[in-house]
Length: 221
Length: 221
DNA sequence: CGTTTACTTGAATGCTCTCAACCAGCGTGG
DNA sequence: CCACGCTGGTTGAGAGCATTCAAGTAAACG
Image (tube, rainbow over all chains, first blue to last red; front, side, top):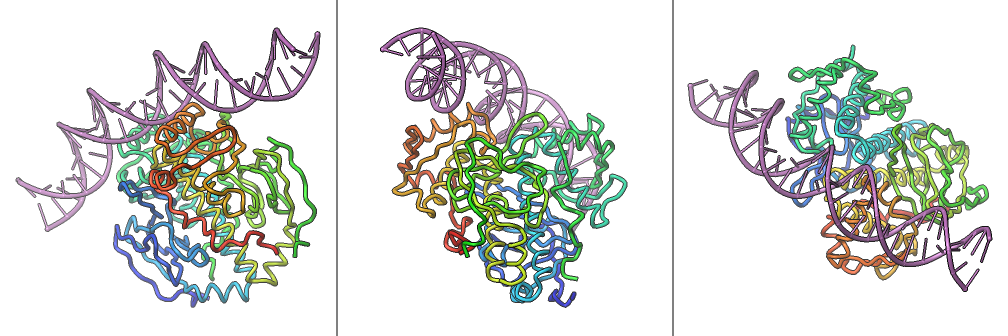
């Protein structure tokens, strides 16, 4: 049923390919690259709401929510595919199992939001950053893009700062802190977690919320 | 189809009636009172993830996510009803429309999470509090529990602080700031928004995310 | 090469937290 | 009836955290 995808598209780096206020007629799956859901305030400040990795539906919720309450920006070059909402409607009419799988996928998005809320509200800046690294490692490993506690993270500190709700400078110092604690190394674009247990315990990280065991990599196969 | 409710229950004030780690066999609807989804960190800090008002499903996501990644605590005396997951399963097998309605309800939860993320990450403390007041006013008005820019909010500043990711003292000063700007009054348990436009513009509040027009008050009628 | 982009660091400012005290209202028990 | 203790709200002060501004470094690119 890869026929559910109507052709793939390349998105250049830095392009906001879905905009707040849009009413998409199709939902978009990220096939490669990194993207972020993004919200901008009237004073110009930007907040990312999730970082997406390959295999993620970036706006499945627009199927029912209609109008986008945030944009989606390509943090790297991305390739994406679309699933028309009409097709999703058919699925919900005829395939309850698949429907629940799609629903589950949006529920995991919400679980990630909740974990970020905890990070923003109650974790120290180091723990906040540590938590994101743990999350990304687990999610990337689940799609074969991380291994042996290493992964490529080709996104800037400015973008990471927008993902953590902090300033660039402060994010930088938080990373420095993690390095000084000997928890990670970060050379160029590759992150290595030197001490997973240490990092996870600093971050109070429990991977259960990601439901990696329940996820199907390609929900529409 | 109110038969979907299997009897109502009273929950005393302050009781955590769903706990992190639980695997509920039914989902719970809040029929009256205030409740909050709550997560506790190992150092004892607490973060609320949503405040629920009457009419809300507090853990519909447990139908598919199975294991709770947070608790739910009664902020006031509450009355709740349960919908067995078996019943929900039937609905997803037989009633696509209803299924989409339930799915939508969890998508709105996620939209609220996103708005909180923006508040925590990028809004000033005053704007953060202002945004919550705007949100609660709109949601309470939608269920007939707010009117003429007034509503009862019978929850403590300690609880509000946990809902905003800040300390009690700082929350108190943020409220003080809103009072000094002549945006609100707050006498005992009743909040009055004296200047809706002022409050909403300080908070950068746009009610679209709540999808009040799409919501059915009782999704199971 | 010179320019640009990203990372890093220092310093000053301002925001937020903790600690501590005080006040008001309320319910309890004497 | 009043004294007491409890809870919740409010304020002050100091310490610590995070932001901004600014400068310097390094790698990437035309």
